[in-house]
Length: 248
Image 1 (cartoon, rainbow, N blue to C red):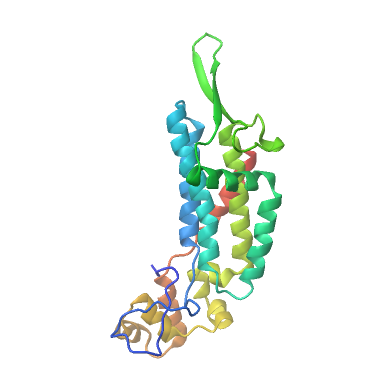
Image 2: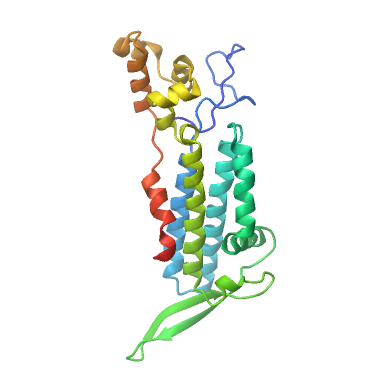
């Protein structure tokens, strides 16, 4: 798999080693962003069944961090892509204006730097009198809970935040398809659009030239196909699934 954000400086001798420079990345990818979204979903699943306030806070801290880091990784990976700066500025404005997303951004900053997330739990009772499931909600403390989330179960609120984050990332991927996914970048259209140098891609992926030449000869289209097989596609179906969980 291609190393995300690998940058190559071929203007100097490096003894065959990769160099990290400030130039634009050869291939960029949202694979790590995808992983962070799925990590967020994992902690969301734990939050949904939690019956212990301490464990709930552990999982909630992990969730708000992972979900926010997904956006940080997006911003870092595509930072040098043409047009991305304007896109991310607009995306950040939308986050600030969305009560749910803005609350979770503040929640993450507070939990990482200042203190404990304030929640209240109440156990329901079953018809036969036995203990039922716990119901957790956010409560006002150092942070004020927005009206839209007052009385909403913590797991439901987290589901809303994850869905909206995934939606934002999908929008970015559609806007920058050949920068978001290395497999798409190495499609016929992607190579043409990004004017990729296949020799450089071979070097970045660490594939011996002899292997490529033995299989493809001097046929650039065959070289492209072989190189494309050596990178992972972003699982957009998974991200799209996450973008639709808000109403579930």
